[in-house]
Amino acid sequence: STPLPRRLYSHPPPLGPPLAGATTTPSQSKNAILVSNRQKGNPLLKHIRNARWTFADIVPDYVIGQSSCALYISLRYHLLHPDYLYYRIRELQKNFKLRVILCHIDIEDVVKPLHEVTRTSLLHDCTLLCGWSLEECGRYLETIKVFENKPADSIREHTDNDYLSRFTHALTSIRRVNRTDVITLGSSFGSLSRIMDASMEELARCPGIGERKVKRLHDTFHEPFKRVTPRPNLVVPDTPDREKASGQPSSTNDGTPEKPGTSKNKKGPDVKSALTAAFAKYSEKIRSQGHEAAHEGGEGPSSSTMEGDKTKQLD
View: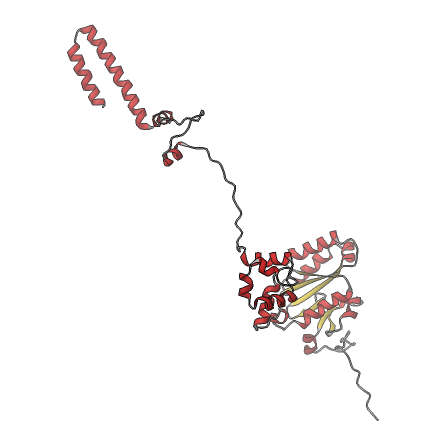
């Protein structure tokens, strides 16, 4: 008897739920997406076609890696059970490094419920992925599983090391400049340094390079990297210290400059001048008392000598 032909699959077939009494091997569990039993009947499973999946007794809805898991929720279900997502995240604890909240957008008014889901995800250090269809949600799970053990370089942009590729990458990073403009600029100037040194008139001569592109190119190569914002000039009134530093006398209200002596007189008294004034008043008082004593007792010379001695002592 001829053997039956093997069925060809364009994608790996899903494992589906294990049969009664059947066990899942560790290799199958490692290479497949583990699906919680509570997800039975979810139409999302029909759209996971590029990765193997199997049911398992797990806490999250999907285990998509050794340290990655996902919780599925739709906004319609969230409106009916607002606390469901919070309690499900609490059940995960800290057992997974990457915790994904896979949110299915299945309602029209998404502002309030999506805000609540986003807030809950951020407060609990979860990554939020929104899908507007079941196909998109399934694609998210497949992609995370496929790229589980691949380095980050596999999803980065690859740039060739030849001069033309780096030249194109540098110029197309400028807004409004496309690859056709790069070819035109390269054939007209020959190198990047000549393009950077070109004036606006020389850039405008290139065909297909309009006024906006010319201004954008010229500003990119000639504007400083750090923009300096001009500060407003504050008018500070003249003070005696500034007048002293500048060496110029201040002017009065009628516009005539003041004399140096007048500015000193207007200046508040310092300690030395206050002590001098006090000693002068005290000497005047002593002198007046001496004159009164001289008139009363007739001791003019002796009183004058005493007054002179006291004045010398005060000075």
